Length: 283
Image (cartoon, rainbow, N blue to C red; front, side, top):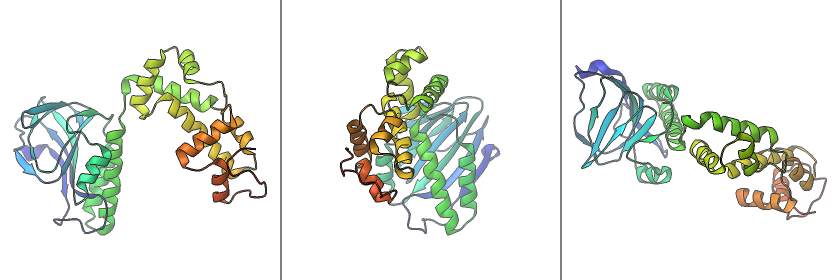
């Protein structure tokens, strides 16, 4: 009976990965569970990711348990007991499993949590692409499956906050429109959007994964790099054109993020070498 609720389920046709890659996808699937569905308690030696689409599921790990709700993701780590139960009349979710020698590093680098965390709408297209790659039964497909799984993991850990989506969209639009204005600050943005600065910080940090100040600086640097690489403008002119009130501050921010001064980056790129500038980015 329970197989009636498995809309998709695909497994790699060999026990271990055949490619030299950091990420090896073992299997993936799409389940819609209903009355009569159950999943056995089995210890599994690979990483499992679950992304809830609708309804709720209940996960157990020893004496710990959590509820997985729509838009949330959770994980079982290698060696843990797989113990899942449907909590609502209908529960739909996508899942994937990953194995290989690099799992400990993968878990540590992504800082994967076991219990549920909100990640946003399930990236159905990525899961479908992943399953299609596994179906190809080829080395190319194995690489492709790893690429899709990496995207899914990245989205799962990037997070999202739909409750503040409108505020974050307004924040992003304002920064994109006015980043050239050196007077634009987080305090000014908060006033214009009519929200408290702490409210803006929480919303932006949850949605984008960085503070409003970091987002603003990154946007300015992104546009500054384009001018640095593709124009003959002096470093001071580029700093002024991208909202940095001081050339030295601009150079310091670039060096902190990219490890080199603006002039060194331009020289390394090989663009417009005719105009000489001091190596430290000052004039």
